[in-house]
Image (cartoon, rainbow, N blue to C red; front, side, top):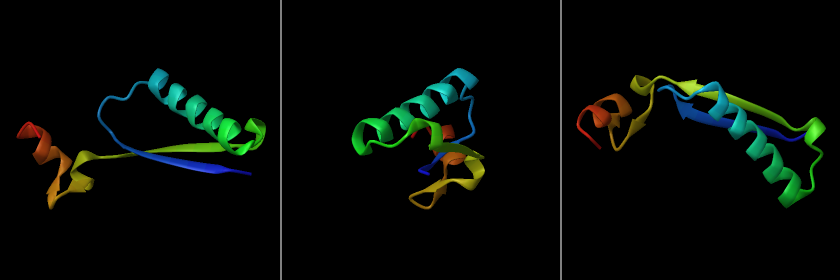
Length: 67
């Protein structure tokens, strides 16, 4: 049973976008690895931007500064 974990920042991702991520990731495993979509599990974890860091700064700070 394939397990896919997608981690994204929590910043307005819509339910439709999440549906597309789940469908697309599932289809990728079908296409590339021949996995059964009925047994493929996809979990989306949304992380607050204060809890996600890049280059020593939080995403919150980077976005406020336009980076």
